[in-house]
Length: 457
Image 1 (tube, rainbow, N blue to C red):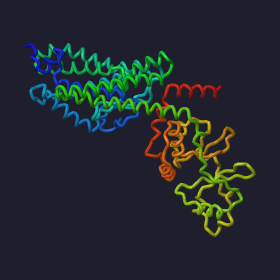
Image 2 (image 1 turned 60 degrees about the vertical axis):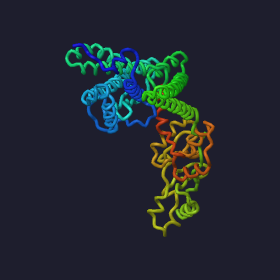
Image 3 (image 1 turned 135 degrees about the horizontal axis):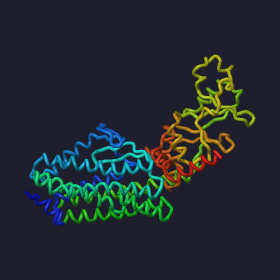
Image 4 (image 1 turned 90 degrees about the vertical axis):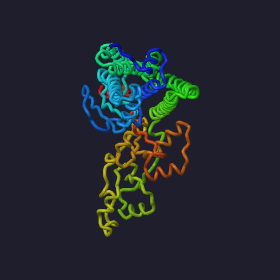
């Protein structure tokens, strides 16, 4: 028996996609949009969280609880294509998500082949996301990883199209399921090849511009601008489609365009932050949260100095004699030594070496300081000059102020003061993840390898 497709499927085959199929297609494209953002992108997607269901090629596959909501929603949506039959709706929704996983697996396997570690693949409310250790180091590697996902989706579309006829003879609805999935996988492949970030096509544009110009940043900017253009096209066409036909697909297009614009804006902001952290040095944001005392001073002198400063984050106390740095002292002796002996015991008796303090060179790039601050329990670094002598300190508020100043953004003084009292970044700004993306940039990794080789020689 030949397959008798539903009106929606027949309309899709005839080139006029019905609102129902268009809504499903837009939803699938929406998933594709997000799954292509996996990797080192700064994202709120829950990566590696939820229930671990299996491992694929050594890559853990997780299901986030939010995915169940979308599975139910997709089941209801697809059931409309099968005269309200929830069984075939559920089967279609489940196989669609399996297609999303295979799309991500295509990216992941190519990344592994290029030596990039893949931490996990997670299915969540907005689709799938692969968490990778870093981006490929070359333009060709970036192109291959980007093209692998759409290639898998196109192959699935081809195989499912071949299966339509035999499955329709076994049971007509199964043939219709295969046809719908073939259409959606083809749409997923084509949509992801649109030339704009964060889609796979945008990654391909980035790779081609990178290869032609030799500048990865220029490739990212070009692909991001293309993404902005696509976003505005989605918004305009989505509004037009919704007002003209009342189609739910128009709202999906509007949502896609809105996410595209947001993703492009975030990408440009990330680029600006990366550039600032790469080009600024520690000496551009150094402060002086330290006091200097002579080793002959007593613990009573240290106590009186502390009483004169009611800051919740006391300054470090360095010990210096005759222009020579001897060490530092913290407040532990004041807690351990009886008060009666504070006038007798000197700082020299309790001093500790400066090497016990977390430190960084004043010529180090600021991204290294961000990572060092993330590891420092005290939230402060001792800044050293090329001779290895202390010149000041570095904390998160001063660091973020230097970055914002580079971006021509002036932070209000009350915000900075509050951040200094807390030892935190102002406005909840977190530069740690951004610094990690800088450390994983191909040009930064190459420079680090060159520096290591030079030191070894």
